[in-house]
Image 1 (cartoon, rainbow, N blue to C red):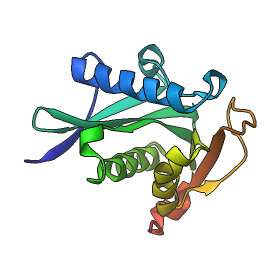
Image 2: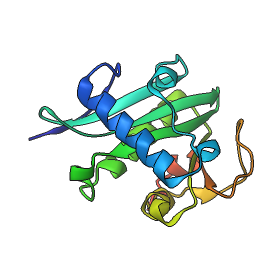
Image 3: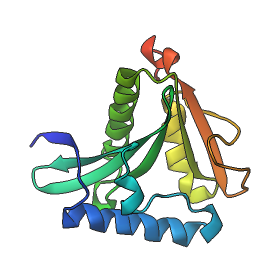
Image 4: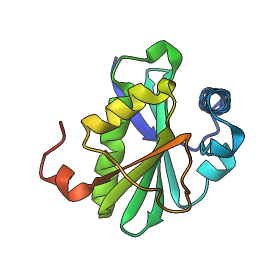
Amino acid sequence: MDIRIEIDDLTRPEVRALLDEHLENMHALSPPESVHALPVEELRQPDVTFWSVWEGAELLGCGALKELTAEHGELKSMRTAMSHRRRGVGRMVVEHVLGEARRRGYVRLSLETGSQPAFEPARRLYAQFGFVFCAPFGEYVEDPNSVFMTLGLAAVARGTVK
């Protein structure tokens, strides 16, 4: 069956359940002041585009793009359903978000993820796309529980994604 990525309005129960799982997991892994996952209400803001990934009627994962400025976006709410991990869903979402960021004319795409060992697979995934560690951006501040990464999109446009 074909996998599709679609803009989502966050009303389907499967999507809400995956986001609830995401928030619960982030709170289990990080202290409350270091959890930067967006609740549904914030994912519905006009500066955020949210996508869900489906195979037939089954939800595989999700991701979002938040506009920080006219030239800078933030990758948010990356989550793969537990039963679909290691199938390339996260890679598909990152590729999709990168494509949209380029289409919008962003010069930079950044993200925040955890510094704990549980976040190592996510950091490796982002590094494979060329994201590098950086200082806090936007409204973030230094936090020992957070890692900040960024990617200049001109490099992506030249085909340097690994």
